[in-house]
Image (cartoon, rainbow, N blue to C red):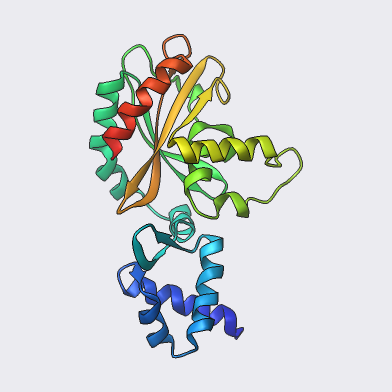
Length: 230
């Protein structure tokens, strides 16, 4: 047994047993090792995205990377059912096709969509998965899922440039991301994060023809979307 790996796994199990969130003191008392050691392991897990902190909450929460790994082999039916009313409200308010997605590995995985008459994506234009850096939803995930940006392995033709990382930072500041014909020619997209208990769990986007949804209109609709997902 490698002691550090064993301890990290035990800490994750303690947090899970405490309902997905636990104070440092609780973890320390159950681990029965030095508080500094526990804190250092938690800092490492936090940096990697396996645990995370919520503003105003002193507890450590299971991070999105754990949920991401589970999602790759799991079922998101519960999430779809829970978010569906939000998707319907956005579709009605914005008059656009609405998509629900989550990060899966280094990709965007689409879980649900609501189409509008005359503005839906053709089957050949809609992919169930696409690279994170290729869409507005990918930008949202890179901006709001802790550690996701850092753990993407740069490979030939897929290095995250300084300009792209700056764009991710802007998304984090503004709270939404735009895709102006970047992933699909002739289509524009707006994406915002969806939170549950203060943590970003998924992303929601609207998309439509560039002529119907120019940049200016998408920026205006960003306020509508953010109010509906709040």
